[in-house]
Picture 1 (tube, rainbow, N blue to C red):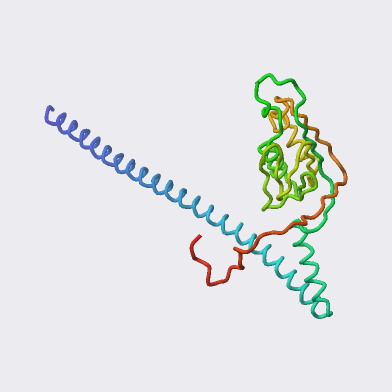
Picture 2 (spheres, rainbow, N blue to C red):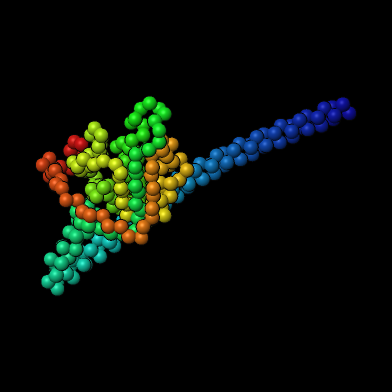
Length: 247
């Protein structure tokens, strides 16, 4: 009887060992498959991102190709009709406009800045005068807000225009200008106005020194062309052989 009991206990122990072994194998298999699934999911996500990037790049190239094909077709059509000079003239006119070499008009804002008339409490007269940094702050804010053409006291502001102090005046395009300063900016009037007059914006900062700034929206402004000279003595068109060189 005792022998039978021992055999029964051994059988139970053996059964538990086998069961434990099988459970261990199952757990290992689950972990392995889980790791494989996680790796596959990560790889799939990476491939999806690469695919999306390629699709976006393809769409961008497709748009560029469509634009280039349309321009080529326009030139071919103009050449076929003996109008190649007109097509070139149109291109030159457009480039002259964006370069600031022609008069332009459109909606926008007019900004007038005047030196402060408040009593001097800081002891420094310069704190109450308009400086080149103040004008640059206004111009940069307008550019950031989408201004497509700018002028300051009648001087067209180009990419090469300087705005800097020269004693008691400000130099712009080599011209000595004094307050009041009048800035014209062509662009979306509401966007330009809000960019300047927002809380903590450039107008708010200047008003702390009692600098007088008025911003007025306009449906039509005229900005005259730049009539000075642009130095190009150090410039020359880049050639294909220059690609990959320094700088």
